[in-house]
Length: 336
Image (cartoon, rainbow, N blue to C red; front, side, top):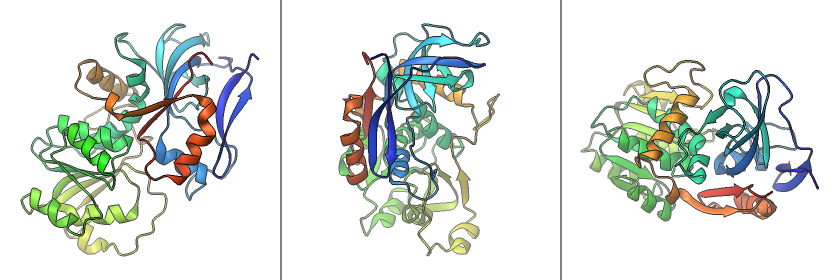
């Protein structure tokens, strides 16, 4: 059967493997890519398959914004890539074929980079964008709230930025242990009744200068404010889809100490040219590819499992029901 496979969320808590006609580069700037791997973004995809607040209301939904593959066809006006190039695909879907516009394609220039590593680059770029906006200075304390994919990359980027100490925070002990291997100096459980006191102790009573809030949970945001230093900065990298915490005192916790709350959604980037602390999507992706090539950034320890598309129903049932969903889940589209 000469069809393309794709994963769709057909109704709440339901993922199916569907078949469609193979898409082609039929319009201006189109690039058709045969995918090798796509990465599951647990937070975003869980919110969508559950149909939570602040996600699109229509079904079916097609997710899968991070992947890598090879160009098989281009529109005549495409200039940056050609057939045979290995590329990152931004905001495609979980499918063996994707067609995206040229500006959503980034060429992987270094043949030595493993495609599994490259598959995570777009998600990593989101973490890097959130860290950049904090404008971290050498020696400033930093904390990451939430150690999913974005959080694990943020820990590494904060370490590379010269933050000291780097504090990693998550309910899951295995993830805290992995963050320590990635260079975090401390890893704390936010459910610990002494959590805020411990953060204050390791920052010599001053609190945290730079925080990346990745959970999107209002309670975590409240804790981030409790841990923040005078004139601290908090990068809101996680999507806070449900604002269910009503006991934040914005006057005493934000206004008086001069805390900066920084929206760090990945769409809020320069589109054409990078400038300090605000890089384009392509520039960040290329920087990350270079960091992987020079062993400055680790990806493989984040990889939990590689699965076939046919396993999608069970994979997404687990995502819906299991808060300990494996960190790095990758769909393998090769030979499909």
